Every structure is written in structure tokens, then in C-alpha cells.
Length: 178
Image (cartoon, rainbow, N blue to C red):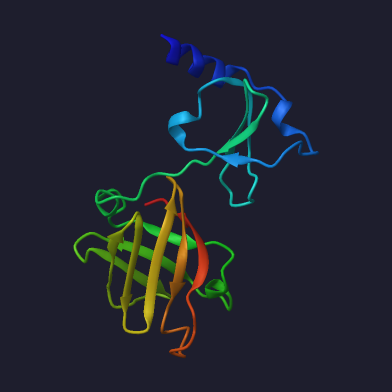
């Protein structure tokens, strides 16, 4: 009963306390399990400009806290995104009219990098401490944050990065509808 009241208040009591343009104190990122305890007011806002709104709330102790929305990356992740395409957002791989996607393939237990109509060799991903990563030749992929419609990580494609010394670059990718 208490949880349903908090959720109801959470959904319907949008206040402007946390949306001030002048921060009072540094924000604290808390884990989701303690996020709803003692909430006076809250607001949604994209604080880190990654396209995903964070929950900013004022606790009963008058402290501002931020909760990031992030799905856990676990062994079921590949099955849930099998055969989906993710387009890189504002990334240099999309320059020069390139059509660049990351395509998840459960049968390959990893991803293919899709560039202008051609697939790369499969890159098998392994899960370590909540991070998916894999390498194939000079190509590599690391995925460390996901939501329903976006993924974040680092990528290197040997077709575009011909030097072995090129370091993987950070990316954001948006899920494309099937």
C-alpha cells in the first residue's frame, strides 16, 4: 500500500523544486533500490545531455539526488535485442554519407557492424561485470549502458579505422524500428 501511494505521488506530483537553474548542492547518484524512500518532490531532466531523462528528487532530508535509468546488462540481453539494428548518433562513422549500424545477432552471440550495405565479420561478445565486449581482428565493441531505445559504449571498425593503433571511440546508438 505504501509503495502504491509513493508511486502515485511520484507520477502525479510534478513540482519545480528540482528544476532550478541554480544548483544548491552537488548531485548524488543513488541506486534504484533507495530512490523512492523519503521523496518530497521530484522532476525529470536530462542532466548529462545523453538523451535520457534522469529522475531528480528532493529527499526528506532536503538533499538533491539523481537516479539514472539503466537496464542491467545480463545474459538475457542478447536474446532481447536479437536481430535489432542500432544507428550511431552523432558519430564520425556516420560522416561522408556512411550508413552505419550495430546489428545484434544471437546466433553469433554478438554483433555485426553494418556499413553501407555490408556486414563485418561477427564480433562475439562476452559479459564481464555488466559490460559486453568483444574483438574480431582490428574491430572491437564495448557496451556498458543500455535503455529500451539507446545503447552507449565504445567501437572501432577496421574498415574505417585502418591503423592498428586507433583507439575505440565512444558512441551512442538509437534503436531503429524493425
